[in-house]
Length: 256
Image 1 (cartoon, rainbow, N blue to C red):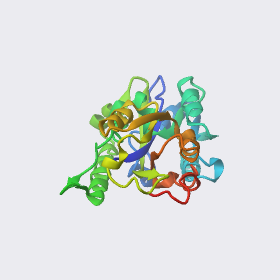
Image 2: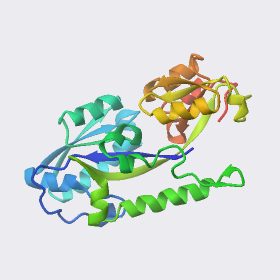
Image 3: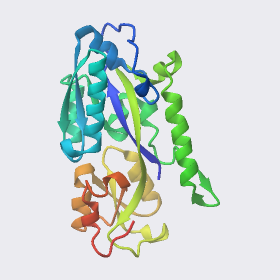
């Protein structure tokens, strides 16, 4: 499965000032950061942050580091935490915050270039019929490094309409997790019900290609549907195994 990034999408300001100097520790992974330019004009900005476990989560803690870095630049950043990703993205779309941190699948409409990174197979390397996970991660690492270079060409790629990608944070490959350890081959997936994120049509298409049945879900309903036997298989990064409670949902007969 492809690596699944978490993407920060930022709304550029109307009067785009020249970008202030960016802290070196952030420039090595952040692409064109329009938030700093917007905030320079108003000295205030807001960031909607989706984190599965709220203020105890890694994403929220990362955003707090971002807040501190912005304070050093003289910018006041208000971080709003969301447990509901759809709500965070909707508030961003409605102008209730200047930026949003959410998964690549949710932010793809804002920038199809960055949003294509977690498309099925886009960064996957196959050798001798098996996924070469080390090489796949290397491809992803080099891609993110390329998109983090502050050049006009990259800025154009990262900007679409009024939206600009500020950072790409890979959170790892998506693994198949099942409540039935007998499902251990592609052939065994035939006829099984597999969770498909409802706003990513490619997932449903892939599931049908292996003669399985796609069941629409969103991030918050993955574990309940697996626990209640409404689906037999889900795909998720290791980072979400416990926060999403998939560890409980797969039961004693489950497997990764």
